[in-house]
Image (cartoon, rainbow, N blue to C red; front, side, top):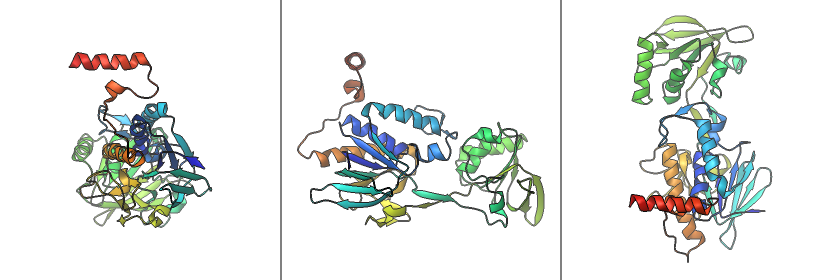
Length: 350
């Protein structure tokens, strides 16, 4: 039995940052994740994708963000159960939760924080007759390493942020990039839409709207595809076709834990601490929902912070927690000279 203060289900950015906030409160964390490594989608699906809305980082690769978070939480020595999925939960008479994985590993904690992102997911696939034949032979649903597409002819389909972002990024990598979208309007960030338009005007990419990919051709590997635009067909030579129509998320076994669910997300109380309808179980990050919810990593960081403050009160109801800035208190693993330097900085500012 693995025992800890806060058991975090999901080792993505939000789950990792929760370890840091808990560590500042002297709370120990253990993380469970079905993936064989920490980092969630940032590590598994798009480690080389740039992220632009992390404070103090004008641009940071998703994989680098995970490395930074792991370095940040290292002083708190979190435990990990990786490559296993949480499948069941039960509550004991002494207000403890026991979570068991699909491999039979048991964990005990007074607080459980579900930070499972979108949960388990599958890409939404276009209805093309011979799609399966070319999967991993030219059809790719995710971009793990942009260098894989170096000097290749790439066609991307989609109208959301992922399609726009990868069109912009791969323009500097691939021999050619074509973006195909069913509409003339895009669902992504306005800044990204404007960048794609500039690339099109400068003839650095091809943009085909009011169109969709209707056929894939090739012997063993993808060699060509057909785009249908308002009744007219266009044949394009193509090494890689990347359909980015989003993911179909599933909560998996967590959906059967008695939690209140809306549209495949866990309902939480955002007026205080992101607790679910079951006291002691929290949900933070993309896995939760509440009025005004935004599925952004930075929002998950905020939710993790308030969750940890609430968890401390639940675990130590008779203790008073005084909020201290890290510039004054430091963190576990800092030596005395570092703490003193931080204090001196504060005094000079004052």
